[in-house]
Length: 163
Length: 163
Image 1: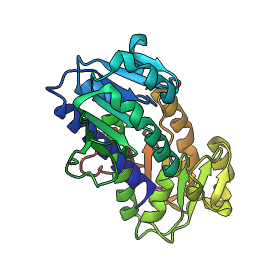
Image 2 (image 1 turned 45 degrees about the vertical axis):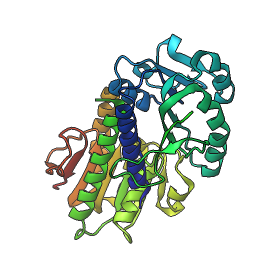
Image 3 (image 1 turned 180 degrees about the horizontal axis):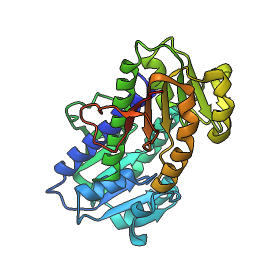
């Protein structure tokens, strides 16, 4: 499979999982956490899917399209390993959805970073919250959610938090 | 439409047009010109579609995945406005397919650059060659090729050279 083909399938899986996650949290109050802004494409998709929902973006340094930069009071700047623990008083047990996209070309490094972030994300979520992630996350008590049709296992990941 | 959705549709259109172009030149001898390498995704797709075909890549400075860097004797380094005229003795009237992807966030600048490149590309192509491009190109005598199903007009462009 060419890199173009693989890239398209990853983006299609990402979109399908975000769409599914938004549907799953429709009846679940609480903010959305976008962990990593990048160019702002998935942030833009999430705010289109969930109009009126508070979306907080955690990012080291903003380099997104100008129209995909969140309002200053919804932006948490800094390294996730520091900002997630610092955000605990603000969000503990409240977030309804979290999206983590830190996959890079280096799969081993991405998984190691994800493993260090998972225990920092979990305390911010309410019971039943949905987590969308690439790479995979392993947290005791989280349940895997069945992937949307057409998403090959391993391309993107969906979990439901139980706490 | 969100930026994620729009980006996916552009990539799907790009893939569909490259697939169609490869099918259209199956019986047409001559090298392929990849004008712009970028991360190497479309180069990787073209070489998967057309195994055994000579693919020459024109790029200002290589920053692709290491496994998507063409062999040194198929790589033409430099600014297209200089390398295309310089390549005329080597390719004049021979290329069967050219792919130009120079679309950026600045549509007006991309179109202006494309307009300056089109008359430099045309002399390299054989009669019946297929051009895949974003942004659009206007060259006297080139025919628009019907887009593949599912590709919205304007997302990507297909032409057949007549000379």
